[in-house]
Length: 428
Image 1 (cartoon, rainbow, N blue to C red):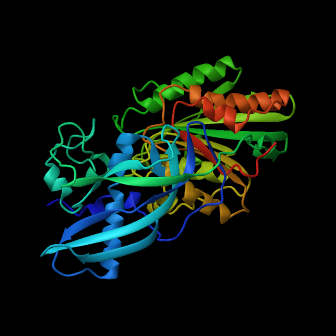
Image 2 (cartoon, rainbow, N blue to C red):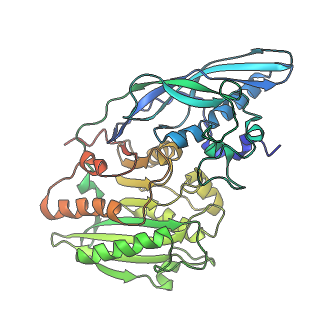
Image 3 (cartoon, rainbow, N blue to C red):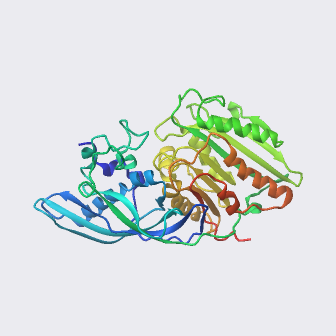
């Protein structure tokens, strides 16, 4: 049997067994936050009832297998940690233990679902399901070695798993929370005072994993490079001026010996003492790849940029994990104490990163100094810049005319299941 699935997906794990009914506000154009509840059960082959610690480990592993059905449904996601309400382990048949538990967790639920139960496929034999599936239950684009079964499995057409024998359709219930109605980025608070007026820095990370490490130019075929080319064309049309960073400038932030990122800055002075600086960084981001340059620039953005827009893979919760990044580089990865807007367009960034980023912000400032745009499902990054230009235009328009675009206006134009988290203090 392959390596224990409990080790394979630690970064999707429900790491803290505490209630997490966060007090933050939320808006999604096609979804709401909700308190999600369920009462799953599963079986293991053993004659003895496991210890409490072992039962907790087994339950955590079972919850990880929500990943595949969540991915195939594209309709539901957890915010963070599940609160286990009850658990019970008892003998079922000779040599078999049945474990029942109930949980509740904060999450997002698509508006396509009524308030009735949400059917979710869950394994009855979680320790055996990957072997039993025998390579036949992978979702599209995932049927090759090295993919995480927990993330890609689903009982789709052609799968040999049997309902009520290998898996059951578990009814999840949910209690929706009310979306915010009219909230705004705090535009003025995004400015940073300088000797010559005020500057708003907007860092954009156009990242990639799947292309040749040696092809990091803006002309490369990667999604990040395509984003950069389209962004440059649009910004130049908007009267921004550009400057491609020299190697010496790059080394001021990334002094390492690995390949340098591609960095280009765009500037717009708006005549009222406000200067908009858009910094585009193209770099490898994969956690196990040649991505030291990306980490240095991301560390600098967190500490100094007013707006951060990440367009790339989440790396199953690793690529932007602050604790892991700090451990990997010995850089602080501390957020600016001032107000920031962080937009993370990668898979499941709501699930992987939102809670940790708010906790990191609270270490350096008071509540209300961070708004985040996160995605509830897989996907979310693009090869054209229309998504990021939307936010740049909102900022430049405000400082030119005073007209505010609300989060509700901005989010509703997105094709992704994304939402704004943390806007409770941003009413007009």
